[in-house]
Amino acid sequence: MREVLEELLTVWRSGGAAGVATVVRTIRSAPRQPGATMVVSPDGSVAGSVSGGCVEAAVYELVNEVVASGRPELQRYGISDDDAFAVGLTCGGIIDIFAEAVSRDSFPQLQAVADDIAAHRPTAVATVIAHPDADRIGRRLVIGTDSVDGSLGSARIDAAVTDDARGLLAVGRTGVLSYGPDGQRQETGMEVFVASHAPPPRMLIFGAIDFAAALAQQGALLGYRVTVCDARPVFATPARFPGADEVVVMWPDRYLAEQAEQGAIDARTAICVLTHDPKFDVPVLQIALGLPEVGYIGVMGSRRTHDDRLRRLRECGITDADLTRLASPIGLDLGARTPEETAVSIAAEIIARRWGGGGRPLSDTAGRIHHEG
Image 1 (cartoon, one colour):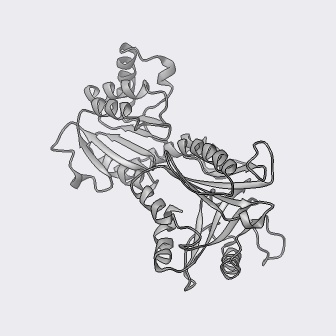
Image 2 (cartoon, rainbow, N blue to C red):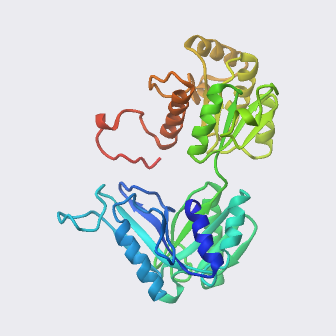
Image 3 (tube, rainbow, N blue to C red):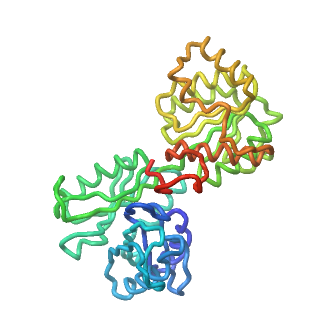
């Protein structure tokens, strides 16, 4: 919903009703992940996408029907048949789309949700997408780390969904939860879609060099909140890193230790050390490799620098098991030469490690394109 939030809010603030279609479940290969959203404004304009084009026209019609009827609907789109005009996914996957009308009446908490997202406060929106009682479908619960607003129909349901949604929110996952009609666990009949709006993952770039400026832009493109940190104030200036959300003048190891103590480092964090100087990179890597949960730790340098760095880290007590977590030299082998090309190779490696990709050309592989991670 993040990518269409402004368009949705524009209609919501005007007092109108927007048609909203959300991917709530994918099976096999699918072009968009759960949470992808399309918004249809009262004037017919469209923002966002749920399939990258395969079923957009059909979903557009579905959304208009839902707005006209006032009844939310869960619709499945699968593989298209031999008819060139059949509605389906040419990629061979299946997606479930939940369509609803969103207005001040149906979603009074939308502005509060938008405020939480803008302030990087974790919030989850739980919506009933299937239930034996049609009047329950579309009911919503907004869940923060210490707050709950709305109701899904009973105290029992609200308690079960709140507990489970906070678990999903803690790891930044979005998906469908199943319960009995009154929230009974390990039963079926009710499905609740939980859209987790966790703060964006962080990319910490250590070393205020030209490669860092290019990588900051790549990080922003991938949805990271990017921090560039360097101990040298003459180089670490916001003007040199327009793609970064913040530029910090501090010794890298001290900054990383402070962030870890504050709980600001998690399994989604990418740490990229580009300093080229052992007095900077060895201390910060000691801290990074000592953290139990970090999504990616990469460090720049030649093969010779890499060997010297490993020797220094072993002398500091870093084990070989810990060193296997280190991407060094940083990036995939793309033949990159410029800072911009190198940034792409680093971003590609972060993506590959996150989702379990092998980094090979897809034309050289078989089987599924999209990895589950």
